Image (cartoon, rainbow, N blue to C red):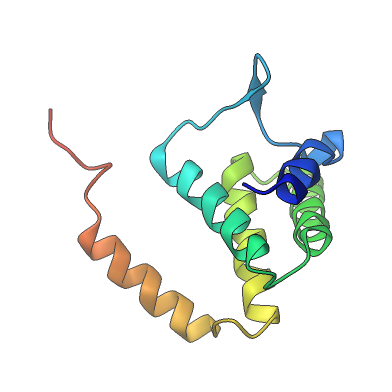
Length: 114
């Protein structure tokens, strides 16, 4: 990550700050780390401003809390990122839905029988 990204992440408001344990970012599943990395990578390519993303995330968190919607931090993170990249014209809703369905068919990382 660049210093700009590090600073943006470190200065996120407490109500939307990334989950941490002993100062380190915490991911409960591989998809959470991928979602985090995707948001950072798109920002570092200057496809959107971090403040746009954090504002979208704050809105998602506030709406979920107001409506008592049970969703994880990273589910809200992904929803925020989806809305932002659609609004920016980086991908259409139809393209995103098609890619999501395609990925779900091929991803069995979380579906092992042990």
